[in-house]
Image 1 (cartoon, helix red, strand yellow):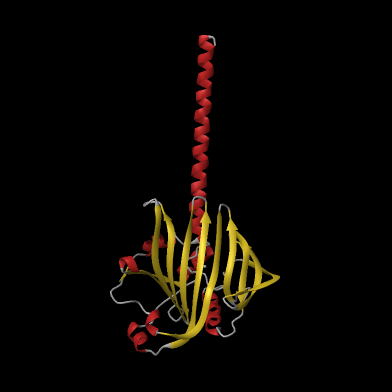
Image 2 (cartoon, helix red, strand yellow; image 1 turned 90 degrees about the horizontal axis):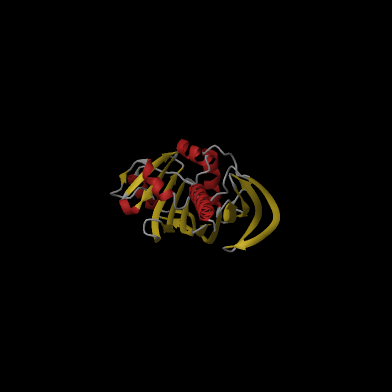
Length: 275
């Protein structure tokens, strides 16, 4: 569930590569009738972040599965986020104020990485190794979700924890209740299950151009991102599932009422003909 973006592209291209952190993770959202699976590569520096996502989802239009690719560039220096949509060569821009509103509503416009704000956390005493890192177990709840999260200390990946702490402060959430890097979580809500696991973490140089807008991309209205967001945003998935369950319940009630009406007609006919 985190995100932001922008410095002059020319300055970025001229800047040397920096040491940073690269994380590979996989996540899945399961719901009645389908599932969405996401592969992520997250490049992180103290003031910058780039998240590349490939989402394999149940496509209602094709009545099968489709794959969607997108990129989110977070720039703490400009307090803005770029969401890139490669298929349309376009991008949307969101300010931190807009991100605060989205996060307060439970939206995952800001992707997973730091421990999400707005939840209550409590250490369980459990732990396990994830991607080679010792990770403490926390029970968490809030915003309609309950589950467990595993958090690793900064260690050799201090740049990531510096970025997450600065982002939480910039977005008005203060320090994280469970400081460190989010390595995995398992959570559930009505009709849905969600999980994420980091597969690998490494420190090393990251080319500066990864945090710049690519040439040829046009700025688009923020609504364009909604079409992408619905396939990985937990809140939007939960809302879609609730809507589907409500529609199915309505259809069942309508069918039951129809069957009841047919039975009444049959009984009436029996009375008229005497058998």
